[in-house]
Amino acid sequence: MGTLLTKNQLRRLPNYLHLLKNLKTSGMKYISCQTIADCLDLNKEQVRKDIALISSTDGVPNKGREVSTLINDIETILGYKTNTNAVLIGAGSLGTALCYYKGFENYGLNIVAAFDKYPSNIGKKVGNVPLFNINELDAKFLAELNAEIGIICVPDKFAQEVADQLIKSNIQAIWNLAPTKINAPKDIIVLDSDLASALAVLSHELYLKKQEEK
Image (tube, rainbow, N blue to C red; front, side, top):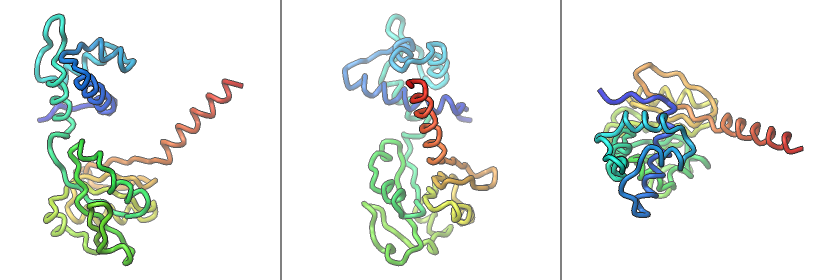
């Protein structure tokens, strides 16, 4: 059974990874939890618990843990060391941008196909991603693509319909970028990333800051 991480830990680990990669590039070989905490403005004890949970080795006295080993441990536990194929549904502005984005390769995610309902888009490529008719999305095709993740980039009124089609096609996990919650069986992993809600939080914080400055 793998290590069970909390949502807060999962939010912090990518920040640790980014910091460690930058420090490795600058020549640092060992790092302490105190240094990580100082660099990221976090609590040392919080960092220590996170690192102890995922680290495969103990630290070296007066040096800390090896940076390269920590990078490998974090990438392994986050699944970045294993390539995972995904399909994307909805080749609008957001879907197209994701298809062109090369950074997913750093996280072991490969978008191998996109699906859309508009005939004028079918048969084209978005970046290097081939575009198919949504009606071709079924269990057999996903098995051929070895796709485990479905990325939903359609308007909210179509999101549940697309999710149902993905579930029927034996998808294992869904990354929902539509501004609505979707229903799925408990054995399906679902991540709802509501950009509108995130923007609302950001806008509200900005509003409060401006009020304080008056």
